[in-house]
Image 1 (spheres, rainbow over the protein chains, first blue to last red):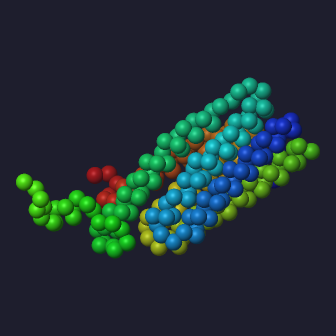
Image 2: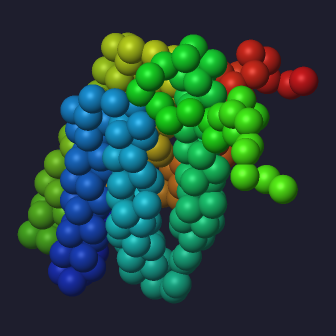
Image 3: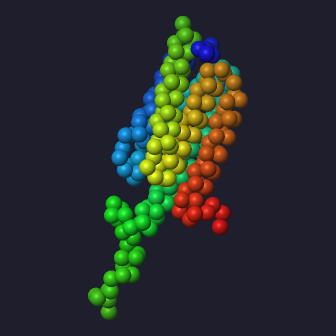
Length: 127
Length: 93
């Protein structure tokens, strides 16, 4: 289904550029998710798609709908605000959960919990 | 002329986003541990949301925007619930 809205040339070039840029950045992020070896490395690349990729495609959508309806339509800002707010929360929660699982299994790849190390060693230089 | 250019560009972007969804789905299927699968699901729903937005640009209808907004809201809730489940072993304590 190859079709497109009937836009003037400048809007068509801008929309095409931003859509293609956003999709390419999202694909780069997904390839990073595929290629990297460690979970703590793999948690970073999808944020490429959730910040810059989403931003570019939302800008393209804003240009397209504003030109089609010949008035400013910025309801895409809702998605931008929501994705920007929620991505750090989900990834922080996921990384803390993975760290907790690795530590409870005694994995040697993750640093130890400083609080439990302090509790095990006697503190000598305390008055 | 400009319509044909825009149509080809949007179709190419949709193919790229479909490849991104494929990479995320591969990570869900293969991911050595459970947290890799949750991360793959997060990337999958994000790429699906962007694909829906490109369909919205292609057809010029705002219906797809509402679908993308719902995917964003529910995907956030799902990923948070799964991360909580990985940490505690139950979702609601």
